[in-house]
Length: 287
Image (tube, rainbow, N blue to C red):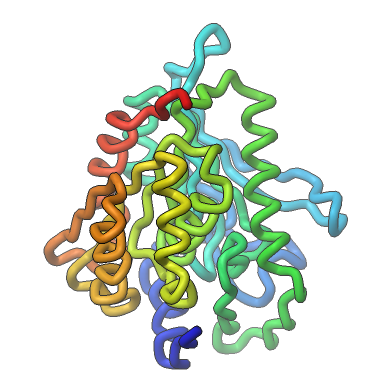
């Protein structure tokens, strides 16, 4: 498999830093930041910042939860699992337009950590680097991808246990590293999801396997929406178009929104209405 150049890896890393709003950064709890990262907690008062005990490694992992005022135990409620990008935490996905749209649509929205801010959710790990002036980043666990994937599944299971979740309207979305994670977990655990959204997916190390990944998603009958900024220099549209071309070849049920003038950060807010409209239109068909 072709490995990305160091330039590409560093650009992906820089993307999440330049997209961050410094006023919203909450620092990682001790031992969880691996020398870099912010947005571990959401600063939006509508969001619950939580932790749970990850028994496999004996650490407490953060995640955040937003619950629309329209959610009720008396009915089935739609759920979105939202995966953050490299170097930042779950709080980054529990803010902004996503919350407003989740409120209007009656959604529960949860954002897991993915074990580390550079966990990659089971997809091939591209290591980040520490910020200037901070101690060197320790090497990741050898099974980081596995731990990251399991964290997402743990949060999904806890959410299903706590709330009355509609399994025909359980969705997965992610940005950058999280976009790659959405494609990976969307394929590996395809029966969990009604639809998948990938925003500027940093799926460089899965390029050679994209046909198999997307074929599995197609076989499960799961539709996909991909949003991409044409001004994104961190995860270029040229890479995302490789995936779109393969979706066309496979005749996958998908939508592609290439947003004029959007860069790696602004694609999130600008593409969010399209994602929520896509989710609303694609409850899972009973199979």
